[in-house]
Length: 248
Image 1 (cartoon, helix red, strand yellow):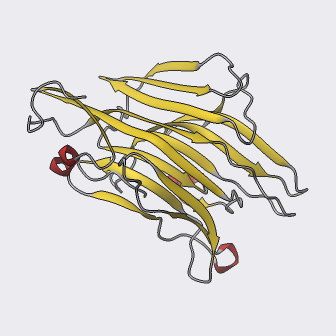
Image 2 (cartoon, rainbow, N blue to C red):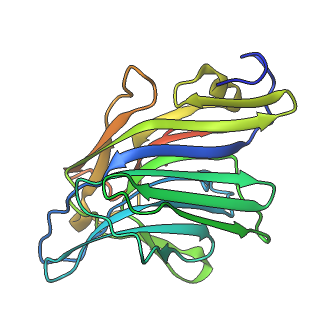
Image 3 (cartoon, helix red, strand yellow):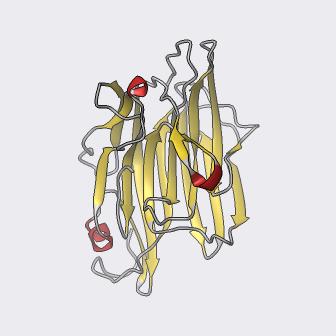
């Protein structure tokens, strides 16, 4: 939907990112591994100091046990598990992130179970929310220590996940605009990226999340677990920004 003309000038920031996906099933070995599926705003660029995100996880313990749960995170603060929302493989998940001024709202719903929607609001200051990118990501999360030094964790074999109904909203002096990943308006913001992440993995962790091409609707794509000598335990997806709609 567009308020104003398709050529309206928009301020270079996003206000909302949303999507649905079906929670993948983890194939576990005897090594701990992790896979996160999420939507978010910010965090795309190296200079970014904040990231607002909400999603689900498919993790494996070193005993071969699989764990599924939902979470949200306002970087640089640590992630928070959503305790009362129980996620199972095959469940359809709908999630979005919305930023208005310094207030961030995250929402996630398990459509399959019919459980009540989880919604949480928080004011972010120092740093303020980053709205320079909208993202739809499947990744191996990172373990971050002192001075924000992060190391990618081992990626869970999640098989495949498909993001659908992926859209973003921006607001500017001439109105509100909402569109899918391929909306030509986002070209005003810069690039659109749909690619695996690059870097950080050790040879023993040569696994990565590989994205498909975008669907004809411009709002859907699949991400598959893959391995290879040159692979990276990384992120993949779509990101729209004064930068991108694609993966980091």
